[in-house]
Length: 255
Image (cartoon, rainbow, N blue to C red; front, side, top):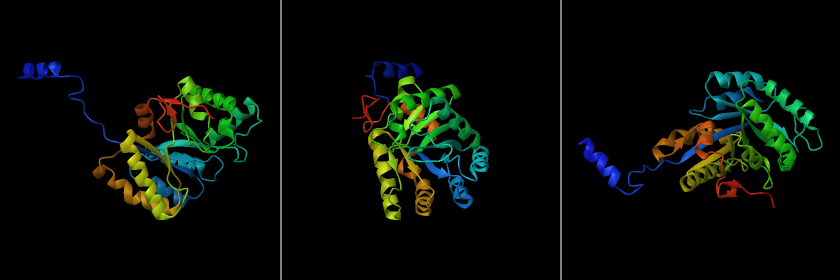
């Protein structure tokens, strides 16, 4: 019987027994560390939500430790121009100054496994600085998520050039904070995941966003959607750009 089954597999055309993979979603919540009540609500979300914690917030370290102990992915939400502050990456700073700011930010957010940009529509367009960042993250064995706050971002391309474990955001949930608008963006994320196989979502700890997530995340399984950790999504995409971000898996250069 086993021989007959093996013979059938060998004689059938390639792909006959291929199993279709379910669509995958990965979720990151940004701007954390500011308000413990909101942070705890994010921490209580079921499943592999990643917490992107701002280094210049009063509860950054305590939340990072709680999230790590709970098995959640901790990320440094690194401020970048036009964001300001002591940790922010700004055009015109030397490589040494930028590295000092990254060093300090990572100390402020212990257990960080990766980094994504907070704001950064100016800074992520700086090709040289993004190259420096990716080299530094590679040395530290950290991943990078490009929040794509500028259509001219060079961040994902710089990560791809050196083979750094990285991703790009597909959907912002809550640019419009109206509950129905957030729900519509969540449905759009599911549709995109069905179309291209996966979607990376970024949201914020707004009350309306958390209400939608608390309602919708438990329903993903019955919709045939796999909700996976950000690290799993990196492995799944293997540093390749999705069609909206590049051609043939390569991040397109800015126009």
